[in-house]
Image (spheres, rainbow over the protein chains, first blue to last red):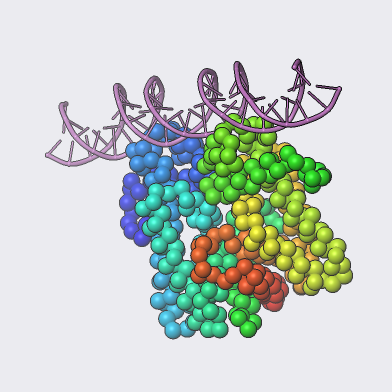
Length: 202
Length: 202
DNA sequence: GGGCCGTGTTAACGATGATTAACGTGGCGG
DNA sequence: CCGCCACGTTAATCATCGTTAACACGGCCC
């Protein structure tokens, strides 16, 4: 994982990635120039090419990183909560919410800029995303066996949309605080699944 | 207004807007060239400038149109179902689902490319969106009075994310058909609200 | 203490892309 | 018929942007 050691040069790369993520999320991949990204980390323009092969490479690393993190975290949670279906699902939901609330720009990029990738990268990201979805589908179907595959899959996608909606919220204080927001999102997600199963295919 | 009469030349403009919406949704505003848009309607490149002041104007017209349609439809539904809170909410949900399922590109643009607008247009679109949200918040709070304002607002945003998730789905047949999908989304949305209210602020 | 490497800098270069200019053409009202 | 107007076309313009070149400099290993 990225927290491997106190690696020194890693700092700059990660700083760049962080700022690039924010900018990409705000204005879109094509809407951001390399000069802006450079400026955001205190160096100017082409200096970035000492750290990345190009703008595309930054986006690729971001998206692969996000998908990988989500999948890894999801697998870990499934393994840790072994045996208890409800616990597994709640843990997945909790993990996704944490990610959505703490890394807003990344979550935004994740389902917005996938198509700007080179074919090979896009294929990799899609594969990671698919595995993550399958993790959820399996967990959901354990808790709600009455859901057929297609319903479960569609519901999972929809709940992702629900959880990922956080970035689209007006800044100030007309909203619950972080913890209350997390709790609310959790309830919303669980309630959605429950309702999906309620009269499913009936 | 645009729906004034059986105006003939309207056809071209609307055809252009439709193709532009599809392209913008697929590859992002900055990712599409005017030549591509032109090619999509059989004319080439700068011919578009006979119909629109520029690329920005197309996006502006699309976004204003979408927000306006949503708001207008929402207001109409609220008025028609006058008096019965549950009916109002269900009607709003149904209307939004129809829109999300039938005009995928527009729904995508709606919450993705807002920041590419001129200040005045963006302000207008945001105002229309805000009114639409308020419509929902009011309807939700009528059905679930135990929800406080902030919770209701956040829940509405989240449910929008849920309903708008349709575009992000793999093309083929691993998913329910249109009507089944609409029913499923409706259940998911209602279930989410119900769960939000269940132990709200308790 | 000299050279190499990591990290930057600024000045081209080349492509792309939005917009405008200059120019056609077919239909239609007078 | 004539000319105007809606609608297009292609060629030129001008800015922007990603990327590369050429050059600088501080630290660290030997």
